[in-house]
Length: 130
Image (tube, rainbow, N blue to C red):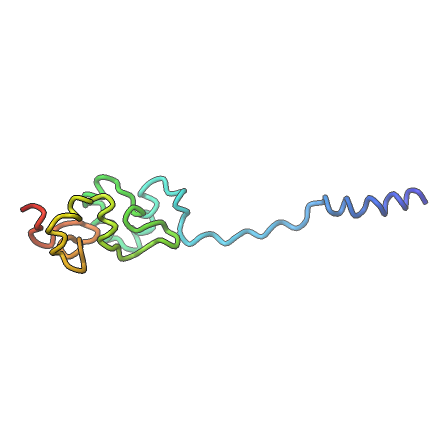
């Protein structure tokens, strides 16, 4: 009788302590976490096959040769990611150029009225050099 009483008291405690079914794995994120992006290669690895012209243009650009990460211009791979970068983002690193009279004449496209977005080559003579 004592054994039965002891077993009935311990059974719920043992059941609560026993490992249950394994937890469901979360679906992987669509892009790697920005904190895990240790090198520019992380974006280029996939985009070399998805958008090879963009990767080649970036590799030959001043940003590419300086190893400026994609997330600097495009934001993280999360909610603040932007495909079409606004010229205002350029001002974060290029404040002097953004404050120049040439930038004021650039119009609504800003930097990209004279510069190709990924290659950053001038589409004509840039007013900054004057």
